[in-house]
Each structure stands twice: as C-alpha cells, then as structure tokens.
Length: 140
Image (cartoon, rainbow, N blue to C red; front, side, top):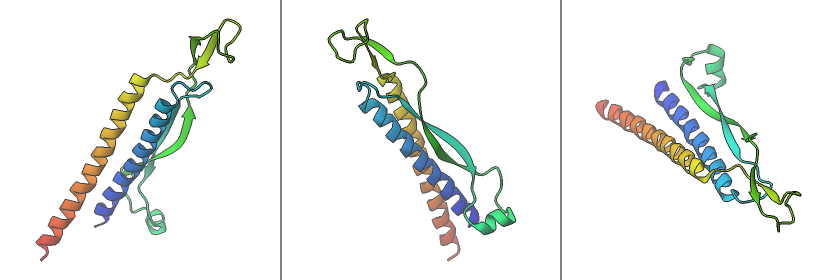
C-alpha cells in the first residue's frame, strides 16, 4: 500500500507543478503586449518522495522515486523586443519601445506541453486508483 500512496503523491506533485507552469504561461500570454513586463518561466526541481518523519528517519523510501516542485518563477533574461512606436511616450530617442520578449507561438506550444503533462499525471492517478480497487476486489 505504501507504493500506492507514493505513486499518488508523485503524480500530485506533477499536477501541482504543471498547474503552476500553465498559470505562468497564461500570464506571459496575457501580458505579451504590456510594456515593462518580463517573460517568466517556472523552474522545476526533483524532490524525494517522503511524506512522514518516520520515512525520512528510517530512509524507507527508494531514492529513485521522486516528485517535482516549482522552486522559482524566474524572469527571462533575454533582451526585450524593440517595436517602433515614435508617438508612444515611453519610446526611446530613436522611437522604439521595449516590449516583452514573449513569443505567443512558443507560449502556446509550452501550454500544450504542460497540459499534456498534467493529463498524464491525471491518467497515472486514475490507473493507480483502478489497480488499488482491483486489489481490494481480489481480497473479497
């Protein structure tokens, strides 16, 4: 039963991480024409699947079982997109305004990737639940 809960926790961390990634991407798309906005990326870090102090103390959990956490939402360091708008009060002396370096096509591709990863984690949770239910049926 410990493996069942471990698989559920790992998939739950994936769901949470991909939801945060999708929210970040949505923010990028929504602000793609907002002067001064900096594109953001979610940074993921693997984490050991340990829930209780006893698991940590006894080191019962296999080190290969890892979940994922969003450890930071970082601003993209690439330069801004320069757009010629000489009438804009925020334009530089040459008439260019610094617009966000957001590429809507890339953001949509990232959104599809995040959505598919989210769906894969939902499927994994469903499969683990079905297996647990079948195991309970065998015990009757």
